[in-house]
Each structure stands twice: as C-alpha cells, then as structure tokens.
Length: 190
Length: 190
DNA sequence: TATTTATGTCAGCCATGTTGACATATTTTG
DNA sequence: CAAAATATGTCAACATGGCTGACATAAATA
Image 1 (cartoon, rainbow over the protein chains, first blue to last red):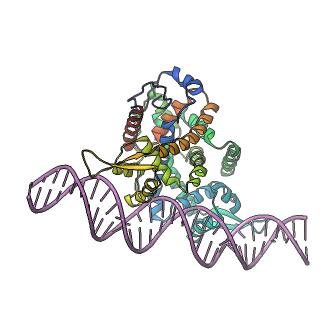
Image 2 (cartoon, rainbow over the protein chains, first blue to last red):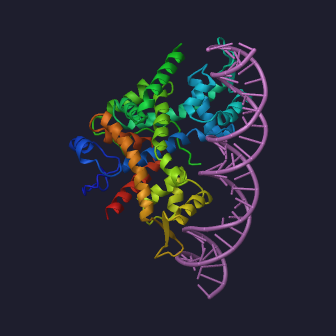
Image 3 (cartoon, chains in turn red, orange, yellow, brown):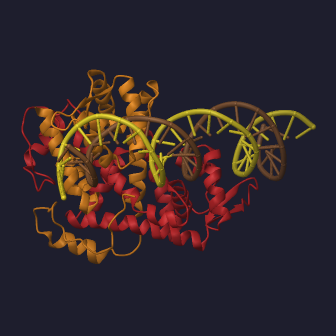
C-alpha cells in the first residue's frame, strides 16, 4: 500500500509497515494495480543497494581499490579457476576495462593467473590467500547488513528475499545466474 | 563517504517489527547462522540490481542521458519543489557533479527551477510536462519488471519485498528515507 | 597450413565522480 | 546596519571506470 495505485486510497504515515492487513496484499498485486509506477520498491531498491555497496568502500579505499576491483575479486574468489572470458560475461564489461583492474589485482598479489591445462591459451583466475582474505572481509561487511535485516524480519526472510531477488533477474539470464551460483557453492565445498 | 555505522552490534529489531512473536526471528539470525558470508543474497542483489537499472538505459540513450540524469529526474519528479541541497543529500554527490547533469536537464527543458518564495536564494526544482513524461516512462519499465517478479511470487510479495529492502537501509538513514517517501506520496496526491 | 580462439595491449574518448577556490545573492545575526 | 552565514553556481583540474578501434601473440582447430 503506501503509494502507487493512484486509486485515491490513502496511505499516509505508516513507515515500515507492520503486519498490514493481509487482505489487500493479494488483491492489490493481481487486480487493483495495473496502473502507475511502483514507487516504493523502485526507491527502496535505490537506497538499499546504495547502502549495501557502500559498506565495502572504506575498506577498499585503504588499498586504493574501487568497486570494479571488488567485483572482480568477488567473482574470482567465488569461482576459482574461471576463465577471463567467463568473468567478462558476468561483469558485462569490455576486456580493456577488465584488464585495467585485473592487472592491478594481479600485480599486487590478490589474484593469480594459471595457464589452462587442456587449453594453454587460457589464463585461469584464482585468488591468492591475500585475495581471499580481502574478499571475505568485504563479504562479511555485507553479510552483517543482511543479517541485521533478517533479524528485523521474521523467520523465513532469507528465503523470501532470495526468491524476490531471483525473480527480479532477467528471464533469459536467471538460469545462468543460478547455475553459476550453484556451481560456485559446489566448488567451494570441495 | 556515505559510510556506514556497522559495528556488528545492534540488531534489536525496531521500526520494522514483524507482528508475530519476534523470538524465533532473532534466535535464528543470531544463533544459527553467525558463520560465513551469505553468498546468495550478495550475488542476487548484484544481478537483480544490474538488470533493474539496466532497463531504462536504452531509453535514456535516445536522449543522450545517463543514469545520473535518471536519478535527478526521478527524485525531482517525485519531490516537486525540492531544494538543490535536498537533492544533493539524497544523491550523496557534490554540487559540481549534480550541476553538470542538472544543467543539461534544465537546458533541454526536462526540469525547471523557480526562485523560492520565502527564501529567494533557493532554486526549487520541478519537472516540466516533458520531464514528467520521461520520468514516468522510465519508472514504467522498472515497474513492469517488479510486477513480473511479484507475479511469479505469491500474494503479499509486494509487502515482503518492501520490508526486506527497508531493513537493508542504514539504520540511521531509514527514517529519513521513509519520511521522504511518505512526503512524496502526499505531495503527489495533492 | 590456414583460420579461429583466448587473451593482452596501446591509444584515446566519454560520463560521472572528486577537491579546492571563489563569486553572487540573500537571509540571518550581533 | 554591518557582518556573518547560507544557498547556489562556476571554473579548473583530476580520478575512475566504462567505451571503441586497432593490432599482437600464442595455441587450438579445421
């Protein structure tokens, strides 16, 4: 409630919404809406994401790294042995852009590249111990925020958050993302 | 900048309270987890947000605008009559950075500035009809994605998404954001 | 052998963030 | 009222991290 559905209904105050009358939830989603932007989610995504990615910034600054380094470090840590081309696909940037930050990470000993065994053209990417350390430190900051959020919400919030975010991904990309994540978990376990 | 206040402490859920027995919520979050990053949410936030902000890009490109323009246009549309200083606070950028994109939006007739009535130093910001048009077009794209997501999830998903995202905002920023959003809704209705 | 593939690199452009210094008009204050 | 504070704008310079285009190299593959 709070906003949208210009249906003249009021909403006023009521900040974080407590339990809310359950009735309108379904009616609103299926029938009532259908007109006017969903301002609350649009704006909350902006603010939530801003704070979420803001956490690691101070730490990164100490290494003279930016968010680009963070993204690279994150995915290499999560997918050890990945190809440069895979990383490019995930990040959706050009190899020139990647090259810059990757070179810094390699030069400073956070990431290393190993020649592929079957295909020696490949430079498979791995984090060093130092790199894993930093990746974990950054992930921990973000995890604390997520846990604070889950702590404020009820049980099952992890699952609903995951389902919501998953549904927000491009239809023709969702499977790929989920496969990537599943594979990362598998590899990490080994 | 921006920065957080983290500190791993605080969790006492207030503000978003769940309505039901909060006991298990906190127990689960505090006791059961407590080790290892929450990789899935971290990564899903990355991918979901990437697709979410990616939608408007094509449209913006037609006007030779970028995401910076989008953000300005969005908040001015949502908060007509806001001061430049307010916008700077929300966007968390310098006035020089804002100045560039704002000037373009004004020059091209998407935003206009009016002298404040009580305080004539202020340049209050308003979208023009043209500006509102574009803002709505962009918001509509994002709304469609959100609706697709809600359609895939059950009823009540709007509410749970809102609560999750709200809880992800900095503790010492949440109230301000909610106040801003509530005020925007009020003004729009008038 | 010829071609394609995986990767890297040089050079330069663009968008958008930053700092610092300063200008101008207006409001507030001592 | 004069002085200080405030709201905004602007000039100049710089950093980061995107981009394109062109080209180089080694290795796999046809």
